[in-house]
Every structure is written in C-alpha cells, then in structure tokens.
Image (tube, rainbow, N blue to C red; front, top):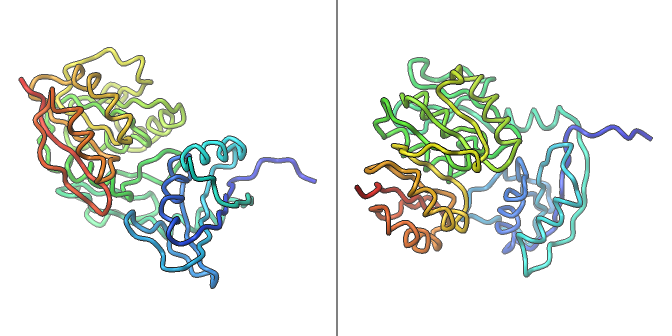
Length: 299
C-alpha cells in the first residue's frame, strides 16, 4: 500500500440545508481552498456566494485542502469554528492533480475589479491588454478576488489615487491587495500575515507580476517596524480587526486612508466603534452578507 502524500484532500460533510452556509464559511476559515455543494442528485453549485443557501434539505459540502493538510488538525479547527454546535458527520478522501486543476481552471476566469484593474489567471489572455492586469492563480493562500470580501477591497483600491503612496496590507493572504496597489502606482507596499504559507504565496505572486523586491516588503506582523502608511487595508475577520484597531491607527499617517473587510453585515457596527477614536468612517458598503468599512485617519 502506497504511503505517498496525495496531491489534495477533500473533507465531505453531510448537513441540513439551513446549516450549509455556516459550515461552508467554517471550512474556508480553516483553510479549505474551494467549497462545493452537492445534492442527492449530484448537481454541484461551485462556491455559492455568502448569503445564499442551496434549497436541498440535505447537502453534501466538500472542502478541498492541500495534500499536506493535517486531517486531525483541520477537524479540531473546524470544531472550534462551529462551536458550540458539534461538527456534522464527515469523511476524508484523496485525489490527484488533474481533477483539482480542471475544476479551478473552469471556475476562475478574468475578473474586472473596478477602474483599470483586472485579475487574470495565467491560463487566460487578459480581456484588455492595456488595463492593469494582475496575474494570479488559485493557490494555497486566501485571496483570488472571487470572494466578496476581497472584491470589496479591490473595488475600493481601484478607485484610489495611489501614485507615490505607502501601502500596508495587513493579513495579506495571497498578497493580492498589496500587489494590486503596486500595479496601480503605489511607491511601496508592505504585506504581513501570521501564516508563513501566505508570505511564501505573496512573494511568489509578486515575482509573477514583476514587482521588484524593493517595492514590496513581505514579513510577519511582529517584524513590522515602519509607520506612516498612507493607505492601510485589512481583509481579515471582525474580532481580529477590533483587536488591531490601536495597532493600525498607530501605523497610519495623518490623513491615511483605511479599508477594512472580512466583516459580516451585523458585525460592522462593532468594528466601526473600535476604529472611530482614530478614523472618520463612511457608512458600511454591503455586498451580500458582507460589509466594507472605509475612512481616513484624523489629523
């Protein structure tokens, strides 16, 4: 019997339809790279947008993970995300490279993110070669532009004057926001994340987009010593954002622009309250069940 590591692992969960969205969000939170919903008739819906739930009474949710994912560790993390409700019945399976590649290449197409900015996977020709085309393939870190939280940040970023700006992407994932900022004219950007794999993905994606090392610094948050950033983006989750409010305020230059995402609509008020001592904030912008907060640092 072969003991070699599989290319990919899948975790299959059987849930009631009304609990499907929460389980899908939990799978993504613990590192799933894709989520597929299947009914008893095996008709898939690929990554349904937040705020929508399949109509089936029983749903099989499949989360796709890298081959080196630790099943026991994923299961413990999933139980924590779903607590106090116990996780549903589940089973693991293994698969090779080809099904994963075919699934993602069919699902990911060029995406217009506002203004001149497009996100284009490597297997697609840019629809507008003269636009700002960020080349990004699905990988092992969060952030492809497909999820509403990332899309909200990209749309905001595409409308900002960035020439000469210093940009901080806090919780960078794939590095998509920091790289987009550089391509849109920022002088320098810093991308930080607590996940070493996210830092590796950010460096690789920066090279793929010909971002010079001197323009994009990639590091763990505790090594960040600079301040005076002109633009700060943080697409994380509500509770970490609340805890980070004093930290991000200290890193912001007077008049700096702030964009926060990863926030459920019902969490927006609590996050805004944490930042109002330092920032003037506009009303939240909603997309499906998610909210974006944007504002400026008081001078």
